[in-house]
Length: 430
Image (cartoon, rainbow, N blue to C red):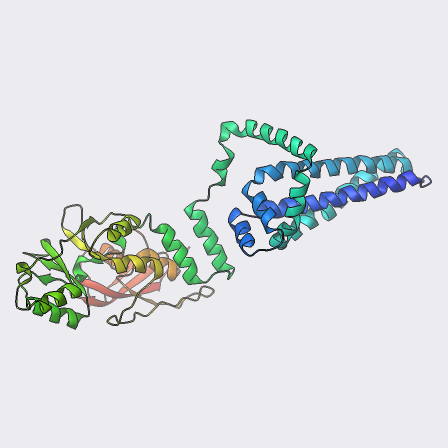
């Protein structure tokens, strides 16, 4: 195979091929960078007033308007360049040159003008998108490209219409946002408290009151026959500001009093009067299945920040306060009367040692999430509920029960209530 003499036309063909392949590489970079760019990320870059961000935000808002033209331009560049290389190879080496040229062009196009630009766009997505967006937006204003894009887009929509609209595929779900927050935390883009805040805000629509309420057994109450002074002394001793007022028993709640109301009545000279003789705030009852996001709206329209939670039979299941709802979102809120709880610090890169000491009143999902365990789930909400379920009765200190791959030892009891347990791994968690 002998090469023919090189002509000026061959130089022009080679220059055209290099130019077309360079354009193909740029379009491949632009396609990858722009497709990976979300609308929220583009808006954030625009807020930072970065060069090219305005064009990027406009393109990111309508991906279908740039994707088809880009794919067309890439295809045209590669097909035309392949044709010209074939002409050049045939002129230089004859029919055998077509085979060599085809193999070389496939390798060159894939490695240099596809893989390298696209991988660079993945590694530097923001800078690549900001660089490419203004150029692509300018190209799309060229009327032949704009017209062809319109035709292609209309054709694509016609084909896809039986499968739903384009907008249907652009909706972001709550689970996707939570997943993005988890990934951002693993990449150290946000810290754990920010991730938990995002997760809590989004899950408020599925979290029910039963999961955050103070259960019946932990309620601090006062009786309607107690005097204002007695209740005020009790409030000071317990460090609490709000109490449900009982009539005959805990299932007969007749009112709600708070520290401000008590001081106001004391100032009126009613310190010796029983609560039943005075006009208290009416109790507000909510079902334990009420969603937390709905509960917030009810708190906003109520004069009291304490609601009585009732079960399906109308019995008192517990109480929930506005503070409980806020803690669900931002974490524990301590006032001057609260004892600071020990936060479970978890090294998310290393396993925790065994056994693991757990407050039995903690939500079992939170324990599994924070302490990297897989305690069995059931009709119960807390670790104590799990212990009662597997024990089949009221356990005693020192009792040991198996639950899945774990052995649970009861460490502390408060009468019939499980307070603290130790959990030991006895089998492979997988």
